[in-house]
Length: 113
Image 1 (cartoon, rainbow, N blue to C red):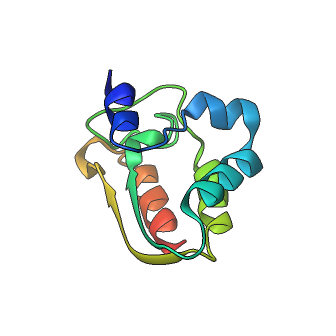
Image 2: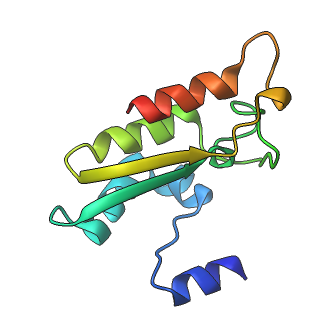
């Protein structure tokens, strides 16, 4: 599976259901414990981690994803890390809600953090 391969390369995977069940504080603490404060950090966000109800504008929508506020709060909790760069991928405006552009708004809010 994708997770086994990722873990075999040294990645720790946190699943959305773990965030829902264990909470934002647990998730943030787990990331900080893994990364530490003395390492340069690159953050990569795939917009489809956000639940399709809050980010429909992606080519690979997922159900039971994170809510936007959850990811925003996690990112705020990582502010003291030495973030040297970041990216956010998979936003597809043509699939977004035409009246609200909710996915694009979520993406800009996440990158701002």
